[in-house]
Image (cartoon, rainbow, N blue to C red; front, side, top):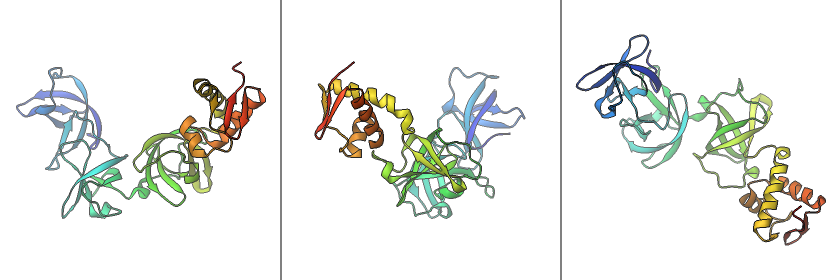
Length: 279
């Protein structure tokens, strides 16, 4: 069967005036219109295409790359609003529909929103939704503490930032642990810091501090050498300034310079740190 809203590996069956007809292993066919054909495509070739619904809700194939696929999340722009709902740019000719019932806040042209794409069972149409919570699953976790994960920032709260973890789970980055500009829609890497009761995920943008000490020590030494032996950062510096320079937390920075001090390689002063020995 054809997988609507997803990539399909299909076989080129025949060529017509409107394009090539592709089929799956069960013989179900879909049209790949002329505008997507290339000279390298031949009958019996197997090609990878994205299948969605055209303006008449008929399955159609494309070689274009959508910005979102079914059962996943993405950050998209609103292109138009009508009496039926909103339409978003997802990289294809036909815009992605978001009915009013799936809008957590009314959409306006030019707005950007994190949305989830699903196949509506009643209408058999691909629909996007901004009601993110109901599409996230934490009952059965597929991650463990310490795992590196892919993140999509979707909501700022009083505690910090809610993030989508690996396109599947809900996680939280605490605001007091963020030392860089973070915006809704940002995609980035992170780490599972802690799994709390009810499978709530605490996420960090940095590895556990123990894993960062050695690389941070070398990074600080390298920066000191490049700066001529002095850096105006010390254990009294702000977390933001430390993160801006080294991409690490103040806790890791203090442990790293403490280690360098014990090794006799630096001197720590109020105004900053001085390089004493490069050995």
